[in-house]
Length: 289
Image (cartoon, rainbow, N blue to C red; front, side):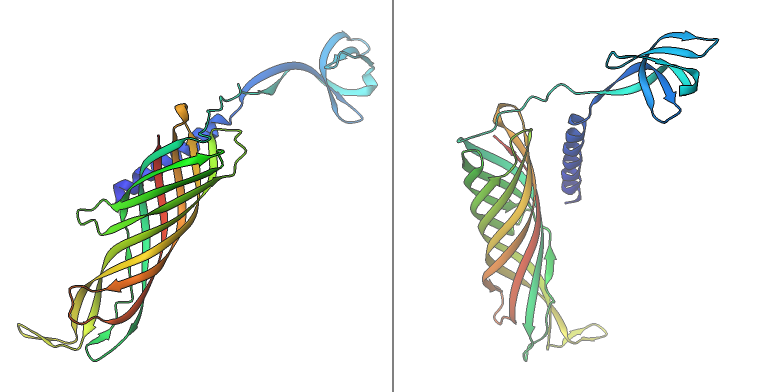
């Protein structure tokens, strides 16, 4: 999990560095003579002649106009002063985007999932678990079609990378690209509605007494496996880095609200009296073909 998050952070900072370097202007220099006037201000240009005994100067400014200055009109002058000049960079090539084509994407995501519990004690379960936090990292796949570039409709699915595969989600995906298409970074709003299944281990205190060598334990702690099914609605924001041949790399974040459809402890003869809710924060990176 740590190596995955490290890789995602590296990708994010690499993308930000790429944008910053693309926007940097190259710098050149100009050399001018400068007269500092007594009434304030300066004039840049070229000294055509200087009368040393009287201090008179014949000067041509940057617009080609010629002036004559007496010694009483200026404080001092400097020759061959260097001024930094910003030169506009060569216009960036704008890569074409998909307008009405299909797109297939694969990627990785990290889900910071919080499960909240509303527990009611009974004769057996006397203390609840207070919920739990899960960090499923998933392999993501999506397929869909663009319409007039701005709108995308498709399907998407996530499955946890762990051997148990205790997190699965699948459903519909919509994206709205709202940038002006003037660069190679697309801004979009992703919305997903997915059926989700996941598992979580919760610990409860029961009214049983467990005898152990040298004593006993009361109340007894039991770890139960909770199975949940939800409809998950997510809303987020994303950055699409447009590559050659209409391919792209996407980075996005989203907040996910889970609407619980069912929750159960399938391996238990007696379930705790509890209801559950869940929310998540999701970060994902995806490459699209």
